[in-house]
Amino acid sequence: MTADQVVLVINSGSSSLKYQLVEPSSGRTRAGGGIQQIGEPSSRAGDHEEALRLAFEQMAEAGVDLQACGLLAVGHRVVHGGNDFYRPTLLDDATIVDLEKLSELAPLHNPPALRGIKVARSLLPGVPHIAVFDTAFFHNLPAAAATYAMNRELAERWRIRRYGFHGTSHRYVSEQAAEFLGRPTEALNQIVLHLGNGASASAIAGGRPVDTSMGLTPLEGLVMGTRSGDIDPGVISYLWRSAKMPVDDIESMLNNRSGVWGLAGERDFRRLRGMIESGDGAAELAYDVFIHRLRKYIGAYLAVLGHTDVLTFTAGIGENDAAVRRDAITGMDELGLVIDEDRNASGQRRISADDSPITILVIPTNEELAIARDCVRILEAS
Ligand code: ADP
Image (cartoon, rainbow, N blue to C red; front, side, top):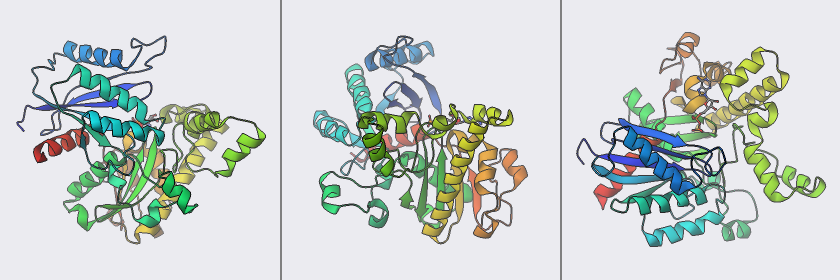
């Protein structure tokens, strides 16, 4: 790899397509953007092919010639890798057929990624396309953490286990935390809190994840922008039986109309804060429920790890919302977490007090860079 080579990273969701042209060696982003609301009347893109063509146009306008910019590979973020895909995978017709079979396991997330892959391969046929999976980092979760206590035969037949998601971010951030501390990941026990629209927590012992909050799907765990996180599975059968809601509607409600948005009608934490300040009780409750769940997971992972060296906040809320960080940690001195209010409020990277037994960090995630570097690794190995 030479310094001027780049990887185009594509994150193709159901109604959006985000892209970044990344220099894996320097970490520099040469171009980036996204096309939203694909398929809706207000959008400039009727489908993913149009969206990708628009992305290429945007890059051309930014002065990027994809044919002549040293494009090494196209890296595709794929949410669910199931049991079989846990390494970055060079895509050919056969692997795409295998990936299509996985859509049953992740009907909300994998089909849009596959659409993006197919369109990108047809528009850029001369470069390798590589899939990087959100589940990969958690492939080897200890059985006790990966297993649901349910009928074993059914679980095996339907591949039901806790897979975990946001793995690219949890891995990248835990490696960055180790680098910041000047220690090898193998020497550290870490908790990573990825708090964005989607939110997840992980416990990582010596570089190996030992638990994470998302499960078979990205619905489990923390309270999120529009997802419920943990909920009694009895709620689903109750709504189905008593409210006569079809299961697809229940699933869509739990994914798209729950979480902070479901409670307060707003999912963005900047606006949520404004609502709380103007005395909106629903917004305050939504915030309290979010914080309560987060604190429960921190406590759980301190117990799972036994000894913790570092806890790191990342993603949109984790990186920017000092009040969330304060409220997640305050009062945990006896558990080893002592926050320094001034450092936290002034946006420093290390926000723990000097005498805090556990170091508390804020580290920006960069999934695109991690995906681009994975692509380079797989190309160099093949
Ligand atoms: P995604 O999961 O979509 O990648 P992000 O990691 O970009 O999400 O996080 C998006 C969320 O981060 C926003 O919805 C908002 O709640 C929150 N956020 C971003 N900037 C700030 C800020 N300055 N203060 C508080 N919250 C913020």
